[in-house]
Image (cartoon, rainbow, N blue to C red; front, side, top):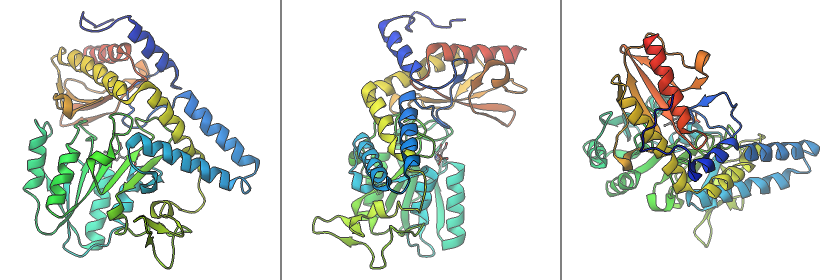
Length: 404
Ligand SMILES: Cc1ncc(COP(=O)(O)O)c(C=O)c1O
């Protein structure tokens, strides 16, 4: 069934282009993969790059060490260009959970210090905050943002009212995990600065979904994932820390990137440890796989060739098509803000009238869902590995399940 009306493209040059892009991805032909928000699918060229590095490693693991360290630095340089941040201020991590842990457990806290977070943070990050309360005596306060906040100002107001003189750190997701809402991070960073607080951003979904410019956002800490929307190998994330905030951080894992003399500022103002940028020191966690990080450069190359703005445009077009189709059902309620500056390629819905929601066994559709108070929450990711037909198949399957 084709649900497309006259407003939506069917077979144009543009669609031929996207069809070609789609075949670059490794996902099986019979899968309808609408869950990049959990983890992305790699383009074949990225996967092959990772494998070629892994093969090289096994030929002579010790002798080739320096070569692989150079390859990781090159991956970091490419990532730095992609998010507009100096590579010296970026460390590779396994994922954004680790990045946020490195901040919360890397700062020195005084009992009574306050962390001001939104009420929409990811569950694992909330666990990290909970432990910080127990371990360091910090107080976690919440900016209460309605699920369908109508404007960036409403979000800023929700934070503004919770600041106190003890607020030391603001923590907010750039793109909310449950609703896909895009938070006004630049304005929030300015607000935090005015109030004398630091700001840490959980950017799990931003890199590869929306164009990122960390120089403009001016955050103290920004953690991101490369294995979601950037579609880099699994187990790749990063932590950016501004030069002024770096000296506030302790090593969470102490290894050879540590120095008993401590870090030192160079004549050029850069914080260094053992002669290397400080952020490259705290990245040293002992022996681990480096090929995944070296392959991040290939993921960046792939997306830059397509174009960051074009990727977001495509994600939003598919999302708009999806939202229109879901609205027409009468039993789906959109949870994602409809303002164009407040949402991207994630669309979340409450769908009612389903006993069980299993879209995989029969339809091979991967989409996260959860039963909440008699209805189901559904989060649909529309990335450049998807097409209009995937949306059609999802809506068709939902109709069938509801009526069957
Ligand atoms: C907002 C947010 N933060 C953090 C995470 C955790 O990502 P990871 O498991 O890659 O660290 C997720 C995962 O979906 C997320 O949505």
